[in-house]
Image (cartoon, rainbow, N blue to C red; front, side, top):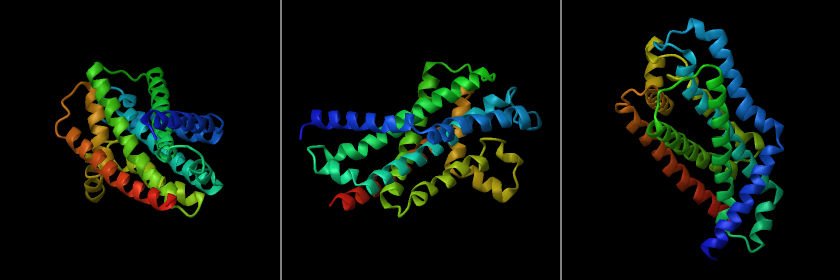
Length: 254
């Protein structure tokens, strides 16, 4: 099967998955509206009481909100994959002259595209709420690259859940931990205000290094070693999740 055939099949199946998202009000509310509501709540209700060392709390908060939105979005990747498996659509595609790899990659690309749209919407809302940055094109590209890598890593973790879950709740359940992680990180408040055990966890989990890197890039400040720690977390999760996901996929289609 030629590479052109694989690309064409993947594009068609990605379009199919994207149509499912546009028709799902629940998906739109959970992945876009809810993170925006959290941002509005923290900026306008709690923001005045939180000392972050920045002039604007929305400037400090926005990176963490973006990560929460991505973690929410990849939960639906697992659900869509699980639903396809349960409906027998995988077997139907495999009985047709459709590239087998395109069936899985369509879900991965759908996750990247849907989360990219959500991130853009949230940034636009953030700008309307007063978010300002002096970041130049290189800094914006670096932020986009980190978010794409973070999305890709979590998406392959979602593929594992979608392929191995026994129920739709099980497929989506793993994402709750990911959504909760930003709340125990530097996303909402600086970690030096936390009790020692909580601070130790917050400073050594992946979200904090990613948030700190994006905050520094937006503020045009030195990122230090945070960017390398963030990249190491993202690449490490991506490699491990991809290997386990492909192993699970081969077992399902064998």
